[in-house]
Image (tube, chains in turn red, brown):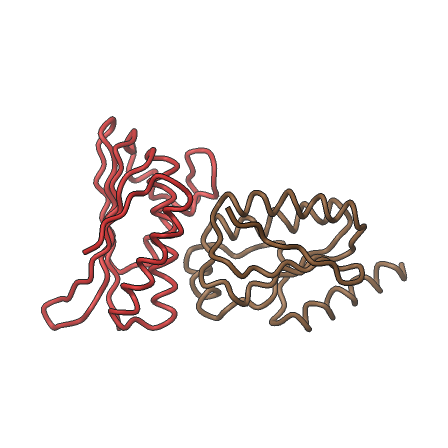
Length: 131
Length: 123
């Protein structure tokens, strides 16, 4: 498991590289590698831009039948998300951006979990399994 | 921060992205490109993303912004060399890059722009 700070634009690039490395280790196809790295890029930017920065962890995981995958956790201590269904609505945006962030990212991964508390912060956990 | 070079070939500007793009680099590229279009009077912009491994919503939005901006400055934009995995991921992400013209490779992109220039000049 690798942890990395998400406090700058440089960190977003670094996290993409870490996730790419893990996806290759999990023997993901090029398409799946591209999807999980793109998801990581979206979530890292969210944590940095909307959450005021936080940390990312990248972990190689395997399920009961030995399938390999990559799990990413992005945590920030920002303002949190007051209305989760709204934040996950296609096209919804807090202001900047296209409103693709969370709803689009969700489609790129197999498992998606959002935990948030107003005033405390947000943690997004995603997992993608190699096929 | 790295800067993406902008090359001039005839009345085209070629932007070949060879680095892992960070957001700041993208913002600077947009400004540099607007400047160069005006200074050179370029009629076309080709953005070559053959080496780009991922396009997220921020980078995707850059393509749309550059296309709109260059159109206002009388230049057409073509994005060339998108990898298949990038195309699949963009669609799933919900980013269709409306308004951005694409071509499979640099050669086809240049042909597309020269056709556009001819039809514009002829009218």
